[in-house]
Length: 263
Image (cartoon, rainbow, N blue to C red):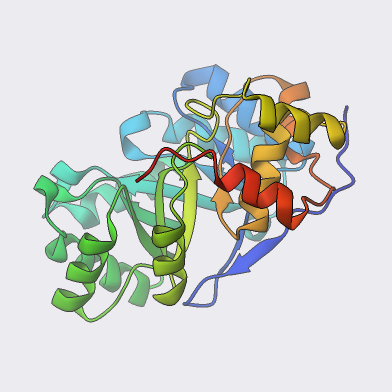
């Protein structure tokens, strides 16, 4: 499978940037493995690349993007600030931009709540970075609704994106609706790791569409408006993760939602 006829939908973030709803996750790839995988992913059809300072692969990701040869504005590039870098946000961002070989990130996230707190100091630095044009959109990762509200109360602005571990096992209607009400797009990392891919109901839905459970999970996220970043180093699997040109029925969506173990 060398080409994917399906066009990946995108979502407009509150600040105006458009983010593809299916991106390519790069953890834990490093070095030449990461560079080759990113170039392959872009060749297959991915236009959103997700990484982080903690992944130690930003230079390789930048090399992979350069090898792909597409104009910079065709790639949506996401990175994340380690929570122990509060107070050094500008230095970390400038190093990231240098590693990538770009002038601007498309999305910058606080990787975890610093010390379990909202991280207002870091968030104010993120707001400044967006104002200065160093990043197009800003968000957080691994935050609860309570922490999102606390951050907005302290700084006056909600994140544009919140990324967290998200799969049918982790699905929370309350969290998803709460984010939508606040104008926050939910992003899914580690979508397959705990998804119970052998669940009979999930398998049956996949078979009905002549797809794999992984493809059904990608499609389920997209229909929920959740941005998903699956990772694979294999070209065939990369292409399969983008081959989601089918529609889940409302009953199928509800059946997948019901696989959640979140109370």
